[in-house]
Image 1 (cartoon, helix red, strand yellow):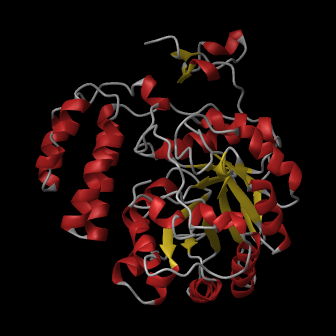
Image 2: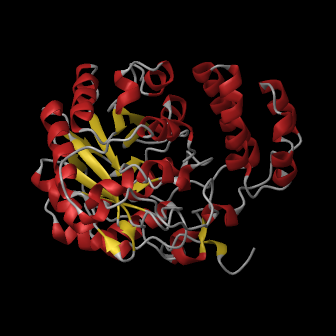
Length: 415
């Protein structure tokens, strides 16, 4: 165990410590207190009142129905479907319709939509509302080059009139259903847009705005700028949701205390760790969280998740998905590197069972893995934009023969 991680006690009075388990956390949160009574309130999105104020980030290739249902078993909150492209949805693409599907026990049902044409996005929102969707989010932060190069995703907030047109169309189509947007801070450090975009979202009737506190150029590298979340909270009157570097339940409390935001969005920190939502529920309710599961318990969760993916996506696509989840669930455990090296031989759930049997079921959760990045690397990028994109502002949707292919690519991006 290095100097950054440790098991520490709960910070309770001396006379009670013998009856309490040691806190399992990184060293930075050894003394972070659980929430006090009424320190935080429910997250209000029109008629929705969410407690704890926690949202599962929409992640392409991740937050499909099996993972949302699994996370929901650990705690309440809002669990957002991976982003669904408007054109594919309206054209009835089978895979898009599958990914946007739900189940009778999923409430509130939440979908993130992607599109740059206000007419198409409005039509999609109207259809989703007719299906009973309870919350809709607009993706304004995708940094994928195929998307930004054609004026989509993180490029849109730099065109305020187009942004306003998109949100206005969605809000009108949604009626009483709350609409939110999720932003990045901007294209890069020299071209920030989050404050102006947040004000547009408020003026056009959004119920809340979420901010991933990194630029599109940063991708997922470096440290999220929580100061930007606090600045946005000061700039708008609607609720602000903070996103970025929520690895432990304690990070969520720290973010809300530092920034004054109204809720947190949890992304990469829950990959292979759906029980993080139980830990979040505990600390927001003023309780110490349970210890993370041992390898045997992790294996059971992974196996159930794998079964659900195969049933939902079919054997071929489901098992392809399972391979990345094996990587995420077992990260940091002894023998996990060897297991990840053999993922190409994973062709059935029986293969998965045999692989998991080779691991030590009694091994405690590796504390360094609490803050280990999953899925995304540390690279940065120069953001690709259409020619002249930053020199003009109109309300016209981007027009490109490549835009459909760019949007389709979103459905296969991981996290």
